[in-house]
Length: 190
Length: 176
Picture: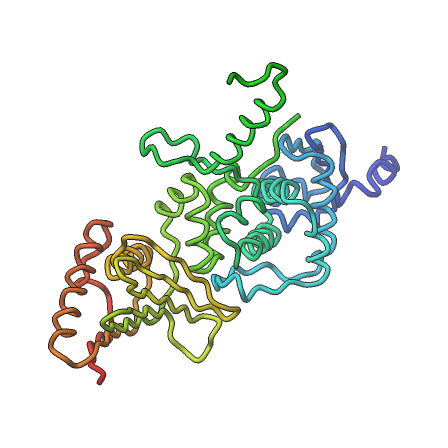
């Protein structure tokens, strides 16, 4: 019995297991979880940092395995960084990023938004703030139309029924109408 | 398949954080993107942290400068120029100029609306407020009118009245 202890838990001692939404298990070093306030609080509440406590896998229902992989990459890179301190200087024009961070976040917008959601859920302030800065710097210096394309936002002018202002998508819809006429088999009436 | 995630589906904390990190011009562009964003910005009132405001009034144009300083990165200058019944609004940026022609708009009204929107978000104290105009009597009355307009615009946009603004050093100067 006494010799069973070290054999069953040589590695899990300093680790916890998290399970992503698609059922994949990840072994996380306790040192890494310090960066996530959600996990850190959970660990201290359940006393998972003690060796004599049985650790259940932690289900992370809204984080996919791909996102978890990405987050672990982030946590590992920032393992020995000092604790993140929020500074409220907010001029998107003056943001600079480490090359590693730039490469890490060189991902499509929807992945970025999913990662932002995950960072918000796990409460990783450094990652959360960095993504917000990157998003702000992507918005800077762009016109409203450019922002719509960058951020996958459709204009909602079309939905407006109160003002009766000519809708902006008029040109495209009239083009559709044109193509419909030209494609119709019957000749237009004279 | 699941639709692509957009900025609007982000939780409010995240959206708030992004908007907080944008500068004045970016927020003005964001306001024009869609109604949801405009309403969000209206509710959140991101602080632009202007330290000084300077308004220079002339007979046919008005220059509005925020954060006038040696550091050009922070300085924003908007010129409202009268053009018949219309108004030209141009924004001077470090990387060039951006102009817009607004039909049937009085340049003073146009300025008042913009200024009221900007000031309704201001949370920190403006250290210096300068209004300058040419010395002649006509322009003096115009400047008086301008202040009245600013007051009514700020009332309609539900921001504090102009005479209650926290301004440490308010000066109305005349230039020849």
